Image 1 (spheres, rainbow, N blue to C red):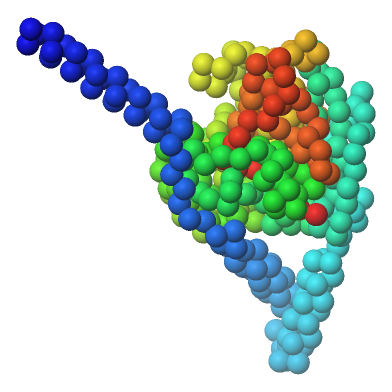
Image 2 (cartoon, rainbow, N blue to C red):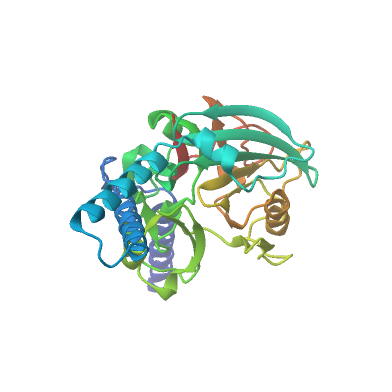
Length: 348
């Protein structure tokens, strides 16, 4: 009799433990208070000051050694004027003078928006039997590539729909992020603030204050050191898709146990302060979906220098000007947004 009692008790304890692990991993939320105003923009002012200082030094080297204090003051004033003139250049003017543009062969322009900080053109492609959307974005500073947490909280299993977060943050354009809350490791750097400094040993996509994007291995340095180097945003889903304008993902690569063809979300850089947000449909009769390699090839084809894979599948959502543009789905049978931990967005 005791034998059966022990077996029943053991089975009960095992079942309870298994249930707890499942709930703790996928259901129970653990919000940690996050103030939306907790944004570290000091790296942008530091960059401007450094840039101004370098220009002053360069100007002084080109003057005679006998320059007086008056000439030095004049030089500083000239540099200040030049810096102010550069900072007032609008995104539209910046886009007109940009040396690089994405390829829009066979694409349909389905939306446009611009303000003084950002210029956005939204294109619809059909690639590898899949509808793919690409937002061509030029900003005056990477400061305008922003991120937000679900319900304004950083934590585990805290989720909200991409569209809801976009509306809450007055976004004109938004995509789902890296779903950091489903994992307990991987750096989380958002708006210049470190929220998680636990490396998962994988490659990060870092957006720097100087407008560039780089792939960085998280084991190589701490999250705080990355912020000190000017990292404004860092994403830890992966993998890297394109580096140095070359596809950087294996033909048969896949995320975990995901299907080979999926809805996808990716972010990429064409040039400094020139980015693309890409979302593909998938799992439907109209759109098969893309493999990671196909996604990398698409990014390379449109002219992206660096690209990185974000959370995909049912999470993949593109929001623009008050509407969901793509067809978010988990099963393929119905359109339904999945709650996610975070978004990447451009505000109005």
